Length: 117
Image 1 (cartoon, rainbow, N blue to C red):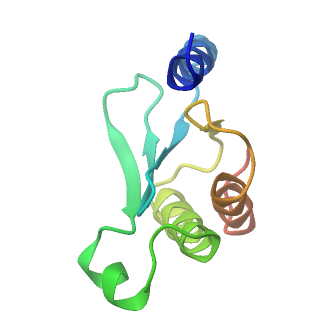
Image 2 (image 1 turned 90 degrees about the vertical axis):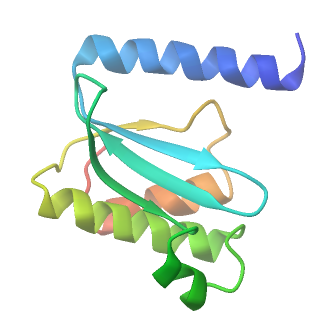
């Protein structure tokens, strides 16, 4: 089992637990150059709120979308949008990535902006 398969296995197990709990899910999608976050409804089919460094407004404000500062801005923005949509309690789905660096920055910014997880 290689590194990516291990990450996908961890992500799958996390998503199974979140689905059983019937919780809103804050998912993080990470690449080398960008980061995005989405809040899904408990059924997993509807996106309640989303934010990404690929959005036109943010691309101009953020020089580099692949660093912790950009991740913190995305965390704050997705939390504000989720709270505006009426979602406060979520389960954090880090997609199998370690809780470190950009993932941690996004999560902490989302907590500070009002999400509870």
